[in-house]
Length: 235
Length: 235
DNA sequence: CCATCTTAGTGTCCCATAAACAATAAGCCT
DNA sequence: AGGCTTATTGTTTATGGGACACTAAGATGG
Image (cartoon, rainbow over all chains, first blue to last red):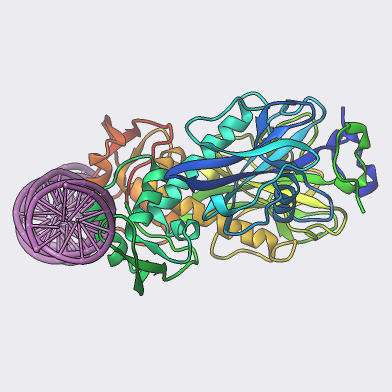
C-alpha cells in the first residue's frame, strides 16, 4: 500500500514515479491531400514501425517547449505555424518500459514541401504520409487513435475558426484556400457559397497581384488576421 | 547538460523526474446558481487558502482513476455523473516543491445539496462556492484560471450538447431544465424558444406525472438519452 | 485570328431555423 | 368568485445556409 499522500517532497517514492511524454502531430497539405509527419523508430519498443514524433518531457522545460524540442530533434524542423494541445492520454501500459503518460500536440504548417526534414540519430527515417493511407504504426492502436483524434479536432477548427490561415503561404488565391479546406475536411465544397462566406467573414484582403497559371489568372489575397478567431460556422 | 535521450529506462535521472497531478473541477447548481466544490488546504503550499481538489497520480493508476480517487479522498464523495478531461497545464513553477504538471478534469453532478461532503485528514474544510463569488484561491492565479477555463468549456457543452441531462434528477420539469441552463450560461433565456428547441431535439420524454408546487402544476419529463450527443446549436 | 481548353469569378431562389413577442391555462388560497 | 403564481402554447419576421449554371480571362494550337 502506497503512502497516503505526499506532504514532504522527499517522501516521493516509486509509487508516484512516471514519465511524461509529448507527442506532436504535424499536419500539412501536399498535392491537395492532408498529410502527417511520422518518424520511423530505430529502437524498441516498436523499432521499424512508424510513430508520431515525440519524447519525454524534462523537469526543467514546459510541455510546449518539450514538444517543440522533440520535434526539432527527431525531424530537424523548427516550429513555424500553429501549435495546440490536444489531449493527455493517461491509460496504463502504453509503454512496456515504464509508466508513461502522453500529452499530444498538433502543429499546422504551410508549404510542407519546402520544409527540410531529416532523420535524427534516434530515428531511422522521417516522412510525410497521407492521413487516409497511414503505414503500420507503433504502440498498438494508440498512435493511430491520436492521429484520428487530431484530425477530428482539425476538422472542427476549420469549420469554426480561421485557423486555415496558418496553413497558407503569405499570398494565396481563393481556389487554393478552398482546396485546403477540401483536403482537410475530405469533402467537396460549393465554390460560390465558399467564396461568399470567406469574403463576408472578412478573413482575407485583396492584393493588387494576380497569379498566372493555366486558365484565367486568379486574384491573390493575404490573410487579414492570423490570430485565432472563432465563428459560428464557416463551411 | 542532460542526456540526449532515454534508451534504457534505467538511465532515468532527475532530469526527467516530475510529478503529475490530477485536479477536479466539480460543478453543481444550488438554488439556481452554478457552484464549484473547493477544499481548504491544511498544508503548505497555500495552507489556509481554498483550492481545486486534486492530488498526485500514482504510477499504477490511470489519470481518471487518480482524479476520482483524489476527489473521494479529499471531499468524501463518490463520482456520479459526467467526467471530462479539460487541459494539461505544464508550465514551470506551479508548485515550489517540485516540478508538477497538472491535468484538469471536470465533473458534473446533479442535486449537489444531497451529496454528503466531508473534509479528509488533508483538508481543513470542503464547501461549495458560487462560480461568480469565489474565495481567495491557492497557487496564485493558476487555480482561478482553471476554474474559468472549465466554466467556458461547460458553457460550450451546454450550447452544443445534451450534457445538461447529466445535471438533472431522474425526473424534472422543463422550467427546471431552463433554470439549469440559465444558471450555467448566466443569462436569461426565452421560455417559448427554449421549450420549442428542447422538444424538437427530442432530448426528453414525457412522463405521466406532474409536479405540484405553487402555481400551475408542471409536466414531468425524463432524459431520453444520457449519452453525449453533439448538436449544431441548442440555445 | 479563331476555336478550344482551362481555371476564375459571379447572383438568385428557396427553405430552415433563430429571434422577438403576449395571451391563456391550471391549480391554490382567501 | 377573484386574485395569485407558475405552466403552457403560436405567429411573424429576419437571417443565413444550401442548391444551382453561366460568363470571363488568359493560353495554346491549328
